[in-house]
Amino acid sequence: MTAEEPAGPPSSGSSRSGSGLWFEQLAESYRFDAELATILTQYRYAADGITLTAAPDRRLPAEAVDAPTPGLEAVFDPAASLVFVCYDDRSHKMVNPVETALLTALTDAVATAEPATSRTDGGAATPLGEAPPAAAAHDAGGEPAGMAPHSDVEMGVVTPHNAQRGALETALPPAVPADTVEKYQGGERDVIAVSGTVSDPEFGRREERFILNPRRLLVAISRARFLTIVVCSTALFEIAPRDAERLADGPVWARLFTDAVGRDADPAWAGSLGEFVDTNGPDATAHADVPVQVYPSTIGSGGGEQ
Image (cartoon, rainbow, N blue to C red):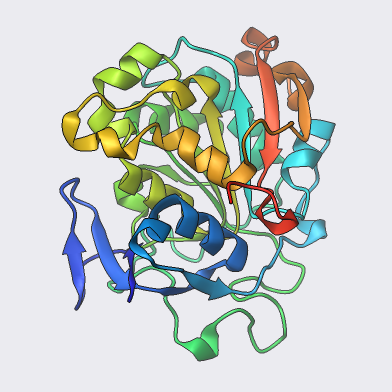
């Protein structure tokens, strides 16, 4: 039995979901590592009796990260390939300056390189990152596939809203493209940050077919080779679909968090946005008191939802 893997443009065996996203019938990925495969299995595929397999666990080279604050250090701790950066705010809709400040700090901490292609979809006509076995896991030099020895890394940001994409394009360095879920299909980066954007729960409920679509979230979190960082408001964890057709999906953001981190988890770091970032930019200054928490995945240590 095989899984519906988020894919790029259509190919043999692919199908389009009702949301317009293409899914390829695959059970093995050479893009993300075994830890993320376990999380994705629990999040979506286990109910169908499917277990994803993937490349061996792999981490960013330590020299690729310069984290100037304890909060950023907690994000880039090499023990996890999926990390949540959560904050307590309930006031933003399609543009979120809190997330812009957090994402600016995250991208500043990574030694980023210009991507091999300027297109976030990778410019490929085949499903994302599903290389033949010979190309999987490591290159000829023994380094993880897609990573030159001790090099800078390719990073990107996925957001559900074009308005937030525009704000991020202004704030982030040119080497870090920000784009929507649809545009990132068929593309991958060493590090992907997912911007949940919406922190107003009532607004989130009004656009539940968009923000609460589990396939959209699945595509977003599966774009990274090494590290996925989910930046979102804790308000998203409260929102469950009211549409009868989607009730079974439940609160999809909370479910992903629980699958990765576990119930009643303690953060690896907690403080204010001002303590998390290492900048005095306008977004960081205006929202310096917003509480922020960092939660790395605990799958590799036997945690997460079992």
